[in-house]
Length: 125
Image (cartoon, rainbow, N blue to C red; front, side, top):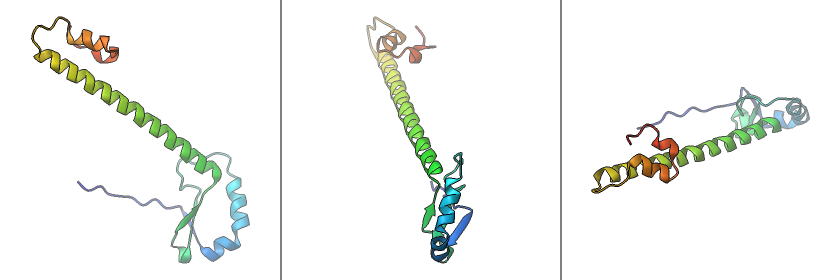
C-alpha cells in the first residue's frame, strides 16, 4: 500500500542573497514572536538559491514547541505500546486458560493477579 506524502513548505521563501542582506531584520522578526505557532512551518522562512529552499529560518519559540510536541508524542507512543503489550498478555493468558484442563481459577482472576485489573473488567468469571 503506498502512502501519499505531502510536502509542507513555509509561506515565505527567499533567495540566499536577499536572506543574507536582510538577516538582521529577519532575526528581529523571529525574536518578536511571543507564542509558538501550531506548525513549525507557520513562521518559518525558506532560504535557498533561486527561491529553491534548502534551509529554513525558524523562530526559537517554534523550534522549542516542535521539540516539546515530539517529546509528548514519543511518550504517548510508549504508553500505547505498553498498553498494547498488556492487552496481548491478557489475551494470551485468557486463551491459554480456555484451552487448559483442570483450571482452578478463572482467566479474569489470573489476569487480576498479574496486575492487569483494567484488562479483567468485563471478562467472564
